Length: 54
Image (cartoon, rainbow, N blue to C red; front, side, top):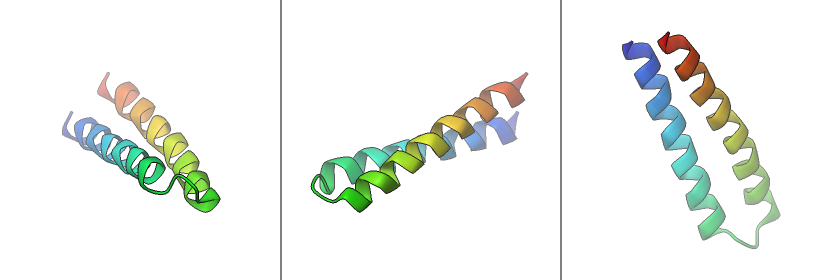
């Protein structure tokens, strides 16, 4: 249970970093690419946390 909550919190932190990168560096294509990869990692870890809860 604690492991799934930790993974969920990490995925929320990654999502917050993604939003920060998209707002702060709007013109940088590299930062948009990094933010896109972080969205995928964040969503994947969120799914892992959800399915490990059961």
